[in-house]
Length: 362
Image (cartoon, rainbow, N blue to C red; front, side, top):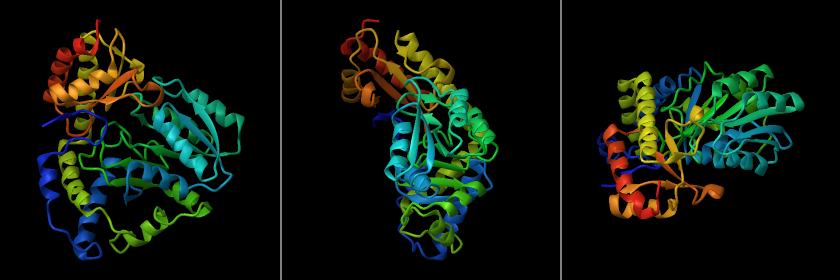
């Protein structure tokens, strides 16, 4: 079996795989109501929220679109804080639906500066919403969301957060940090396949929803809330993925959030230490290096595209390359969700063998 070391989809525990083979149930019946109620109760614990949480059938990007269409109107002033590909995507979605987006972009490999966010909000009092990616998988950088949120609260703006590759793996207490809309995806640290976006909405988010003028149908939070009162979803849900999520959430709660965060931090540090011991250079600034994905620079003559190919073909270790302007310049190692120390030891051992074949001279 391949050692799948990309930032998502991530490997699945045997318990999750087994439960997903169960027969279908009526998604308008009492069995599904019980299943969804159990899943949402556990999700609230892991989101660390008392607010509404919904299951949306779709990818993480679908969740981002939902975050936009439910909270904005055409012409709304929006501040997009971006440090990479997925921050840019969030801004593009808002622009597509007619928002007037101000881009606050930072050098890839670095985190957003909360003081720069403050200055941007001071410069344009008409900004209503701030979009932030908590953990940018394209660069392997985690923003200081707690500090950014505090700045947004100073100006009483709506904060919509892409937490797709952070929630469930990296500390993000949704309520304590005043996240108005938080979005994550099943294929990341949640140890289940792609197919679900999980979204939390607080009172401020609901107020924005009531004022939103962007037409919405499939992603409408209002419909999701109405159907939840009946124990259902508005549209046919990804039942098998929800089967798996129920089991995965129980596993996570048994491990405990502090232990999950500590495990991700420990494993991330072992990846960073290991690649540096091989003579490689890290791409992300050390102070904000992600605990779910590590980005490694193509230094010392390394052909990163060739490395990714050789690792897959010879070592059965699947790595991710760089995206957009980072294509051919970095490779990325995913270490979130169901990941162990042995997985990383195997990765580093394979890297040591393959690096010379990919042109690395140190």
